[in-house]
Image (cartoon, rainbow, N blue to C red; front, side, top):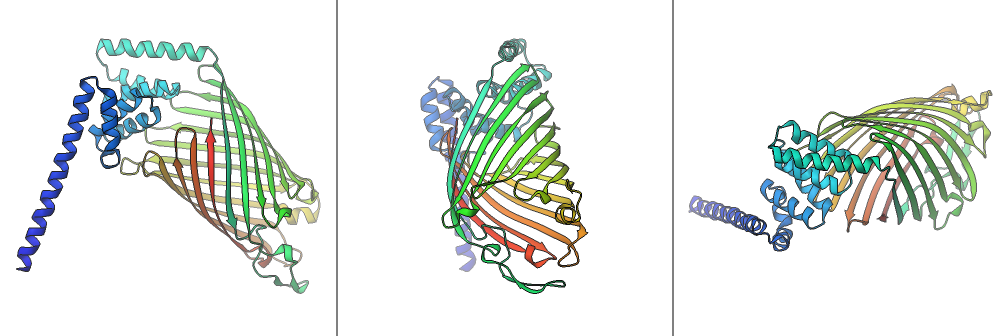
Length: 442
């Protein structure tokens, strides 16, 4: 009897799964019929009803992508067609529609890249002619030197278990001073916070493949009970971008002003460069370098030169949730600008770091990312109080979620844990931060 009951259950489950498969085929066929009959509004409404259960099916994604683009929902349509191509890279009809979606989004570099791939497949003459018309329009628009401006505003709140990045214990002992106790503001302080951010970026095409860019942003983090640790920054960037279908090189200057409490704390001037190589539709390599001048207004002994360089990659996988794996490896050095023993002891260090993470697209509007960052700092001069060369191991683990409410609005949540393990006890600390934000993009 036991085996009989098990057999009955299995048969029922099989029948249920088959009925679901037939039901899925029925509504996809109905969407196809409505599309072919020119009833695009009804077809899109039906596809929207079944989006959660059917996304990922190539045939459904194909029709949903076409209908979304035709209905003006360009982001959703492009996303669906990208999903089809991950599994069916040789479907050039899909690639052609994807190129049209990029064109309507004014992402002309990506549109040109997809149109070129269709042409490489030697399509029929009428398709070639249509593509030629699109390419001519792209060239005309790019030749028109159209300047684009993007802006964003963000506000949020959260909680920080270590506002001042300080050790939990106040007591310490050193070979030179013996037992000691840190002041109240030098040990970990917990507090809630509010944060705001605003930014604007400008892109001006000089000619196809050559652009001038400029960015300006400001952030402010206000703590409820400890205003002496409020943080404010202003960041200005500008430079040149050179790009083609596979490579993008960005070179620019950066200036940053950083405040703690109500006082200017640090000013930074830097030369930045980064390059991206698009190996294929799923893999990208990156490289970057920076030379920065750090000017500390409250403690000149910390003034320094900092040189950093690194490499990385991104890889998109053709599976559920479209996971993107990314990682980078970097190294550099910081050297004091003051030729004194105190400054060299405080500043001079070698830096090595590694980041790895992944981003998951749960639905068209919801994404999650997980990131782990590791960094080692090896100081070159022996600490005069603890009589050893300082060595720090910084670790950070974070989880972030983003939910896109519509084209302009998004809600974000983040949870991060940080620990700085050091061979000098007063530099050892732990920190947890959690918060939520709402963002508007224009």
